[in-house]
Image 1: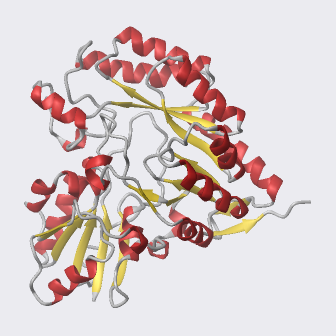
Image 2 (image 1 turned 60 degrees about the horizontal axis):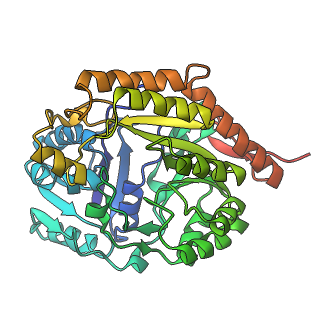
Length: 419
């Protein structure tokens, strides 16, 4: 059986440097496919889709809400050629009813231990319109090493720098943060993978730089201690979302190669100031994720917040506009208050205002988004600040003999020998 796996393109975040990480959803999905399925993958952000490809079934993997309009176009093109199309992924789960209008079948939930039956149904001519496993998570022990071999590796570099490989060590999140959909998607129970399985997968990845995509590395202290202890001998350098603010855990994270952390910064408190300082004291960089347009923010509050980021010498900042994504707690609140004025999914890129803010006009919030980016990066642009973070990791890699230089012409990695 031949399966064509598609990852649709989407509009990129305005003001942010455009780069492309290897997508994670498709390689996790591919790992769960039975051996009798031959899969061909296309990332439309970097590749052209062959709509005349010889295949039996088309699978469209969607991560972002803003991918959906293009995903629906892709589905129509394949369906006009007589192909059946199945959808899956985060955005599919968030927009299940709408996606069903464009798909022959919709898969909701996590695929491990389930996808083979779906494919058998297809071959028997009995493909169901919906396979709903949203609230019935598979045994976490079924999660195996992602199938990164389906990727065209040389595409994922930026100006000769190899992009990070994505890996996940757990699923689910016990924190139900107001703008986040993770509780709905993966459940509100923390489900860690066995440490040995995570380390085995990390060791199999040729790239020395990883992005641990777990929603939070702050959920279970002993598991983190075990994980970071076992990761240290790999000498990988990695990025993650917040790490538990604990001296023992932070030291182990640094020893295990923590490069920088995406840290939510939502106010100018001493708690945030000290949190950033503690990370830096352990040699861990900080990329602030700054949400603009929350109900407690005025125009002056946002200006003070940007000044605060400069004061604490944040390494990098990513500013986004609060966006009421489906099934997030904030969307329910805004719907009840009739504050959402756009459901054009192409506008749901977190750089456009689609709701009425509480303390300013929609236009003022859009202007403050530009103000934040332009003011924080006035002395040196986003690319230069990211470049400084890369310099730091390269120095660390050269110190421990793991530095690799990517040669885009020869399309392979060269290990730089220390002299």
